[in-house]
Image 1: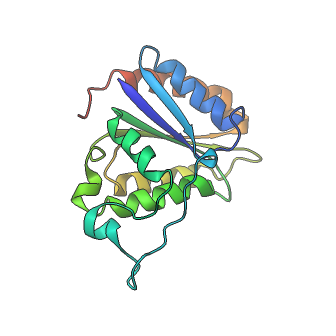
Image 2: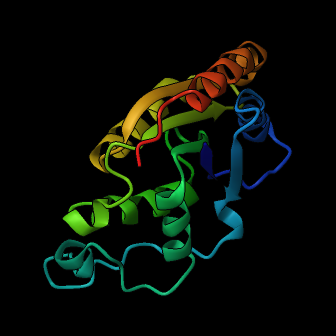
Image 3: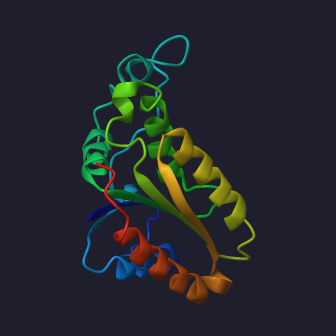
Length: 184
C-alpha cells in the first residue's frame, strides 16, 4: 500500500507535520511520501477562457507548466491520499487551496478523474492559536475532496490544545487506512 500525503504546511517540524507524522506511524509497513506544497511551484488557476474554464473542463488537464502535473501523477499512482493543512482564517492554507482548486477543475472531466475517483482520502486540519477554526476547515476540505471524486474516509480536525489526543486518533486512522483494499 502506498499513501501520498500532500501537506499545505510550510513548517516540516510544526504541528501539522506532527499530525502527519502520527498518521505515518500508523501506516507502518506501508509506503508513504510526504510532499510540502510550499516547497513546490504551484500556480493559481488562470481561468483560461472567457467563461473561466479551459483544458481542465474540455480535456481533464491543465495547461500551466509547473509542479502540479507531477504531483497529480504521484497522487494517481498512490493507493490512498492524505491532505493535511494548517488552519488559517478557519480554512485551508493558501498552498493547499491553490492545488485543490486546480485539482477540482480537472476532475470535472472524466479523464481528470482517472486514478482519483473512489480513491480513499483522509484530511487533517490543524489549528494553532485558539483552534476554533479546525471544524470549519475540515468541512471545507471534505467538500472539495468529495467534489474531486475521492472516497473521503475521514477528516480529522485538531487544535493545539488537543493535538496529543488527536495524534492517537491519527495513528489509528493510519493503521486502518493501511488495511484498506486498494482502489486500483
